[in-house]
Length: 255
Image (cartoon, rainbow, N blue to C red; front, top):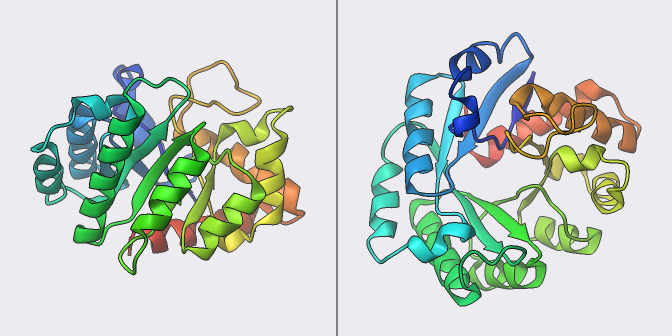
């Protein structure tokens, strides 16, 4: 059975068939889905899904796009949300210098605040890093202590940086782009780092893998990510599914 470690099933693109997709997960060999929030509303929806469905777990957090919407009370609201449903992480949080939808100094400030919340609650973080590799790494390094762990989702940085994160106790997650023909860097990283530090994800409804690129993504497609990693490492699909599922359960403390 596979685990999709990052999917946004709360997204409006699932409004017409969300229940059917979640009900079919077992049939599709997907055992568990982790559903991170991206803003306050999606965090609430993620928690609600985790309360409704046994196989859905939630994370709560404010994406860097929405960092500018945060105020001093936001952390208290997120803290309260972690007491509901099956909340297993703070996320998706981080930095995004590609779109710069929030000023970079605000992104950094709110990223640190949410990291501190995760450490307080002893929860892992789910990190979004787009075109902000150095600052993301530097902030995590500066905040690192025995209570901080997490995953860099949809990893797009170098093999060298992936190994540094692993040395810090973090996991590296791969999504649909690893199946893209011209995506050389994620393929290289997946090939070089130990399977014991890898998670797999879809980031549904985004980043749809080949051969369904261009269509709405959904958790069943995590099989294509697992298959590409198996191909790159020259190992069996079943081994990738088993080990990445164990890694996900370990990181998010899922029994």
